[in-house]
Amino acid sequence: MSTHGADPQLPVAPRASAPVDTVVSIGEVETLKRIFPRLPAATSALLGPGDDAAVVAAPDGRFVVTTDMMIHGPDFRLAWSTAHDLGWKAAVSNLADVAAMGATPSALVVAIAAPLHTPVALLEGIADGLRDACAELSPGTGVVGGDLSVSKTLTLAVTAFGDLDGRGPVTRAGAQPGDVVAVAGDLGRAGAGIWLLFDQATRTTTRTSSGSGGPGATGEPSPPSGPGPCEPRSEREPDDVLGRTVRAAHRSLVDAQLAPTSPLAAGPQAALAGATAMLDVSDGLVLDAGRIATASGCSLELFHEAIEAEADALREVDVVVGARARDFVLCGGEDHALLATFPAGQELPPEFRVIGEVRGRAPGHPLVTVGGEAYVRPGGWDPFADWNGGVG
Image 1 (cartoon, rainbow, N blue to C red):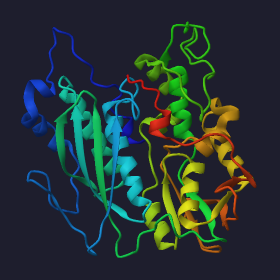
Image 2: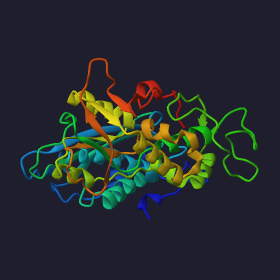
Image 3: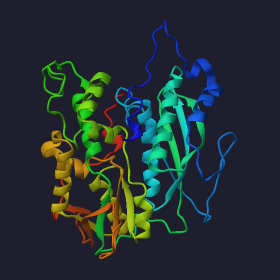
Image 4: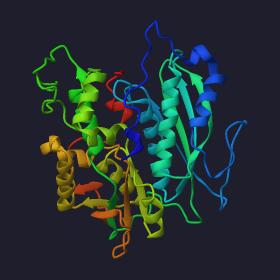
């Protein structure tokens, strides 16, 4: 059982009769005193939090570094995510990028900007999520520093570091025609999870106890009826009660979106096995495969049978995805699987499975084909195009 199942509800604003500490009521110094003991320690840290900067070992003189932001609204909704979820996801989304370079994650730097009346308990929950994600998925990785500031919008910014262990980095640019395309980790679950939340865990003026997309008389969610996995979402208000109902009914899918896992150890294993290119599937399989194709000057063919097998596996997880399963696999995004290419005939690490091959690129040929044809549906996460402006 994953530890990210802890902290089932967000800390909520207290009633007037039961005041709790907020970041503005106790101040930065006291808030940090409460957060620091909850953060994971990094075994690579020669000097941890407490000074103006940390000192982290880089055994071969190099390190991998990446950064990512999570902003309330386009990246998460407090109505659905627990504080623990936020810390967990902030860690995983960055650790996966390190692993995708073939490196072993070593340290995190975390900056948080929070509204004035944010409960300190929420920040403690985020710290717990960071700690548990590191402990479960990347033992020895810890938080070595960061910053705490104020903003009208809750924002998490994480920078992750990794150790190449003397190897060269695995970039997106090394795929060669004839290589096999392989993936480690789940495909489609996170995309299905966010689709369910937007379809069933939002309030509209037309929602009734028996209406489509809302809880029925039994309290169970009705079959999804809203926009598909790659279609724009309407302006609707997230509902925390409906969110918990949907999460309970579709735990695997919603957890994959709100508190994802990633096969982090498979990244260094792929590097050792001779991976020629690799990246973290965060924006959708087709979109991210296209990035390898662009960087490598080739095209990627995803086998029809392999994609259908991935879709069948997703349906076995939860039948609610139904006929949309293939689209979730191809464009759902945020599963943080690892997509890599390997020389033909190379023995793959155990977590990888073959889903396609690398081919040359002819003029006018699509970057990515599925069963020999271009995937014509829109797909992939684009924060500038996909956010509907909502929060909650």
